[in-house]
Image 1 (cartoon, rainbow, N blue to C red):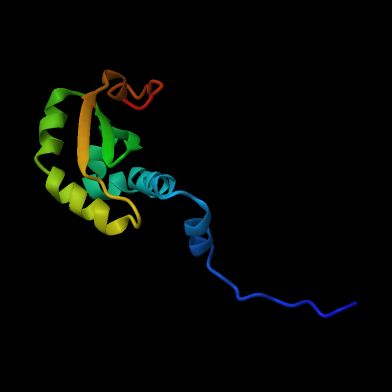
Image 2 (image 1 turned 180 degrees about the vertical axis):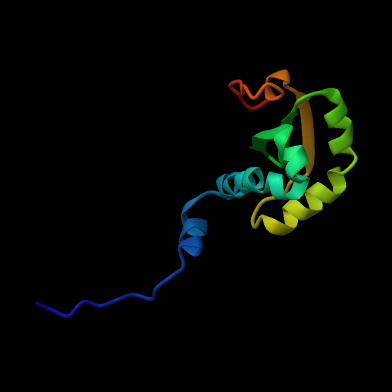
Length: 114
């Protein structure tokens, strides 16, 4: 039996770059923002909000009431800077907030992209 020839070992990230279209890679990386939201927004805000969508640079966050929309909106620039620094391959260009009163009671509803 002939000896196996090994090709150069490549990182999985570079293989993904070769196989997946750029838009898919950006959206996959964007979902990392979902996981980072509680760290970027802080524990108190994370308890009163939930990231529900990321598409084409737009991060959609649901909050318990309009007061939280105002409070979080004031920090949008910082949130986007921190998310963009931490997430490789995607850009958060906009954060959109919408009220979901079910978050206040701990009930989550089904979500779809806007």
